[in-house]
Image 1 (spheres, rainbow, N blue to C red):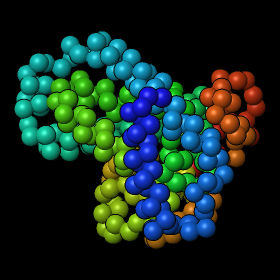
Image 2: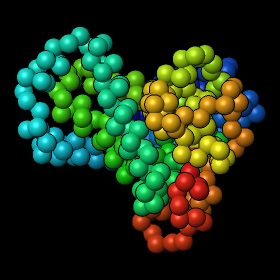
Image 3: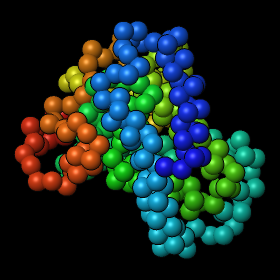
Length: 265
């Protein structure tokens, strides 16, 4: 953890803590709630391995596949206005995210990594940081590799990365946010809270990271009125601390159910 990351974390806390207090979905949920310290460790120390892993996978993939995209394609794309590039990136990146996310639910080996994120039982902005590095690196690679291959400008990619991170924290936040009909286009906290629900009716639903329209298109949307889940989490026996959670996917063990769709949310 470096000083820059610590400053970014503190700024984020100063933004989200008041928002969650003013617009709380669950007003009785405490700031220092269950697993607060564990998720704080993720927030402060998980960034470095994820960044290094993402740089490695993106560099390797673009080095191996870069020849597939003619140079004039990247020149044409990067010459567009930044705002238009960002919109295009959001669409392309979220399609990649959607299918990678579905794979982490459908394939048992990958689910062992993703189950760490779904072990969250009290959702808030801090809990959104609880993601196994392997899960995060591979899922983000599915988003970032295509946009690097296509030659989007560095400025637009940086702006997208900021939007993606802020939106991800909002999706997990303990907030009640009604965006009306836009909820069928843009992922909202209610949308993503249902993805985390430990309720059978919501299993394998709401995979998109930013555009709920993708789930609508592929028949995986679940958004029942204005209701929210009664509980979150998984039935898997996930360890409660950071180190054991990092090791969990790699340690031989039995599972409550070997089929991810019977456990995920």
